[in-house]
Image (cartoon, rainbow, N blue to C red; front, side, top):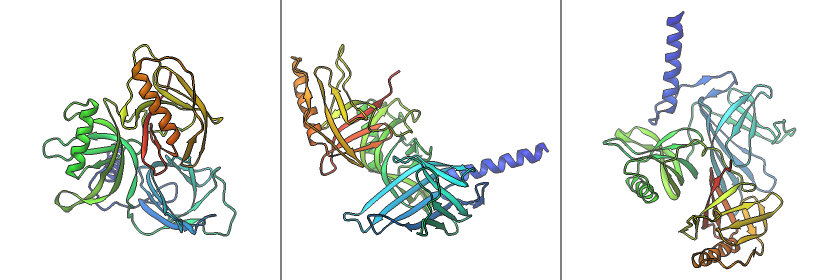
Length: 357
């Protein structure tokens, strides 16, 4: 009996190792208790109230990681949203639940080993004759993702390759491009990381299958833009996505200039309250007013402030803060990092979520 148990444990370990390994060998398909043959890629075009349809590509792995790409067809300009997350089975609903996206959980009823049907936001069936199903063909064909991600960057050691371990899924991706490796290493050192020390990074990146050493394909990450680098920190506490409202956002940078904390002064921060009001400070005057948000849009109304006389360093910073809030038209969150964006989508300021005891 013990020999059988050890053999089963070894087989399970080998399967998980194969799924999580950077090199992409052929992945064996298994049917789990949820009724799906995994790994698999599910595709289909679902109805859309204000566009020609939403094209889905959902990759599911047995280790409960998913990749999802959605494209809104007929929109001008074209809209696409990619995400990485974790899924779990919901036996009571006969469904799987995708968790990790910024819009909350998504429910899919299991209609067969290769078929899923979208449910409503409360996990109830959608009573409609419209095509709300996505289907899978044999095997998995992972889609390329372009999205902001948070993870731990580790520089190459010796002949090894640099890696980026994404925080939500725990997946480790190779950093193949030498320019990307140099850029990340420099950013880590500029933020205070020692040579070769791993550090937490928030990046805009592309995740795709690329030829690796010896031509063996493996999942890799390519850097599009570095958002932030935080040395000495790991994924713990940085895998969940903070909410825009009711989060204490420490001000990290305004217009590309770092914001320092002044001794014996309040920490620079902003708080957007659920009722549509905000308050902020850089450590001297207090600022406040109203804001409006919807989807990715965000705008602040006229900014009111106290009129205390502050030491000279505060004047320029407070003017920059008012300028940033006045120019803000959008926002973007990756895990614990918030960026305010101008009308063209360019970043104006960087904030970090802080959870007070």
